[in-house]
Image 1 (cartoon, rainbow, N blue to C red):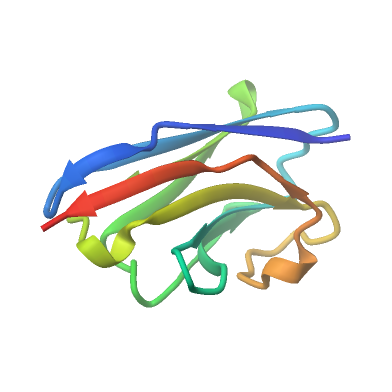
Image 2: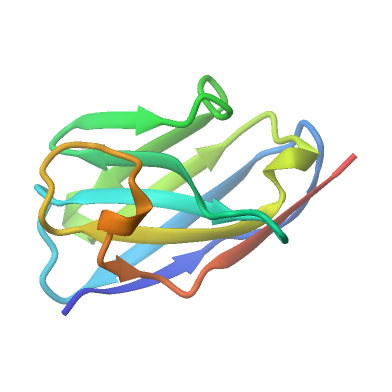
Length: 123
């Protein structure tokens, strides 16, 4: 069973940067699809960025500002967030889809989730 733990959330002013980390344990393979999702109060969970077998996929709202990466040796996935905006305020979750070897943003397909880390961006 895969266990995911997120780190790195916090409060930052608009224009600032944060880096989220997701440490994975259990049966972890680089061929899985790993991703970051977020959920703001009163809104549905949305895909932010995913990575699988070297390919990546991003939500349009974060393209050019966020970068997802993975360190296979450390079983850790990162989300570098630059030029943050107040609209990026949300709880951010790490997730893995063990049945996919391609990057996608369909949340229902992800079968393991972390507990989330909160990101607050003030104007």
